[in-house]
Image (tube, rainbow, N blue to C red; front, side, top):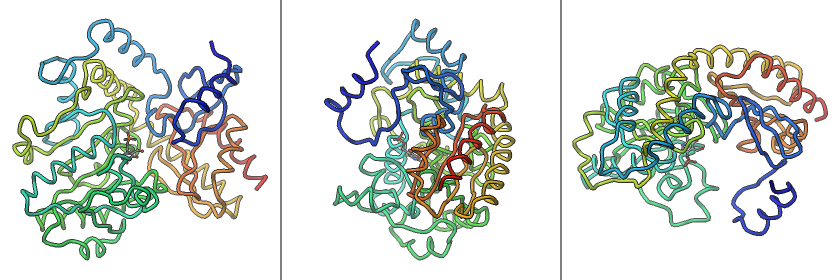
Length: 393
Ligand code: PLP
């Protein structure tokens, strides 16, 4: 095995500098734990930027990867294979009347959903309303849809046709709706934008506004999906049905896969040849994702996320009572954030020095999104370290 210093040297010499990488070189993971090249153990309370719903290297996922990779890894999408068909059925049966297109990532799923809005608009309507502080990915249209100027500015001109409204402000949605508007796309809990929760009244009013104006409602559940918020999909908390849902991250629990779940009433718009992906929904990816579904069901992980999330939240509220610089604790299930009066990045680094991994986003928000099977002892241990670091602020 390469030495840690050599791995970092290779990064320095050969990798494009798009990431602010920190910490040691990691070599192994299991559940909520990671080991670095010196054999030191870290508690990972933010596995894979929200990907790790089952934690690292869940035995069921490892088994499926082994078995399926010996049988069949890839086939192109002009051929039939069981694994993809079975996963599509699983997604449809667990969501709303729909059909599924498989992609490889969140942004790619967002792109596909946006293409469907153009088909729906039939050349007459094309504008999509998205929310301030949203995050939908880094490809061109997904980035253009993202409600944060800092991501778009260096790449201007961006894809036209996006208008910005504010989360939980239905008037702002009404204000930017015009006769060219074809859809609204949003995250029900904004992740990267600082763990901002859409209120139920807002979503119900938004859904009604979309219906009234013949506009599509697209929910980006790339981060909130697969049990994270205490339900399999976050839209279930709101008593609404979206027209389109995009999924990724937890769908493969570490294996790259994305999905566009398209309401039945829209499916006739998408004719053969209008959209495609070479790798999307391969036998290996879809077999793994089916195992993720089965495991989520078997281990009752949405309920576990609701319960552990309530526990984590109560712990964070206690921390808030102790430290005046914690402005707010907010979240849903195991997607929790703390907004601080101080920048969170230096704190994230200090916490990592103490071998716990959390996340710093939107400058002032500390995000905690553990595996859905995280234990209370693990939450306690992480919180103890966070408290220790906060004492030094
Ligand atoms: N949508 C949401 C809500 C996300 O959180 C992300 C990534 O963090 C994306 C889309 C983009 O996903 P990916 O990085 O897989 O392209």
